[in-house]
Length: 80
Image (cartoon, rainbow, N blue to C red; front, side):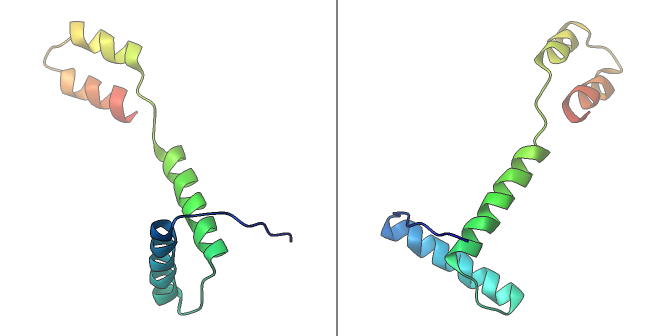
């Protein structure tokens, strides 16, 4: 495995170290900054995948079709 150097501000480094400390407390073992970055990348990727894009065309149709079943239609469009 090869490594590279990245530049971060002191504030970013302090935040990474804080996250490393929290992960260490959870796992009970030392955590490298590389592992912190891997954790953050994975967290970001999972969070991005879990966000569903809103179908604006279907949402726009709801505006003109409001009736007693509207809340169910809105739930279907927004939550799938």
